[in-house]
Length: 286
Image: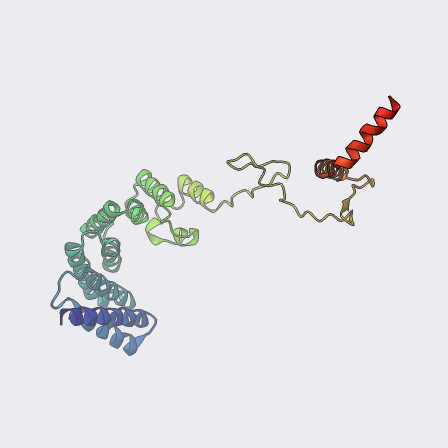
């Protein structure tokens, strides 16, 4: 019975997650119905098992994105509900990175909706979630911290956070960074312009040196056949240069020498009769 219940909950969780995805792609009444159905599924999963952190996270994730669809203060309730789910998720699964990041994002969005000052407590609460995310994975919330520092005009801290985000591969694309309203106070500064210039600068193309010889661990040449071995001046297996000189003559000469050597090695020994005849002729000459 326990195995059947576990399977049923897993199936319910998958269905609720799929409904959340569909709800995000929908609008109006259809989106509302899908979100509500997903919430019921998440509730059914955690009803008898509060350790289902994944269900709590996805429940909060759905609430967060439904809140984004609401108009300003209408979304406040959804953001608060999302934050409570993320908080509960981290209680039962302390290393859930998604809950740590999205909990901070929910507080940031809530601060934007309420149009509070950059030093408001909501940003401090967001930072607490981001600090948790950094504990779980270094650099995962570095860009989020850069946004908070940018809002507060903390230029040096903002640049350090951007550099860390770049180093850890969590930096958004350049266009999103430039258009981020949280960075409006710093985007005209020299350091920010220079950072973006370095970010968007195309890397110099690598130029292959055809004359460079590459060896493997055993000392064998590994790029010998790098180029196509079929030359335009190759005729019947013989390769000529632009002046008509044979380029593989040495190779053919070596091959001939090898052939002669082989012939000498495998040539038959003289028979006994032949040796006797040669000996008799020598005696007659003597």
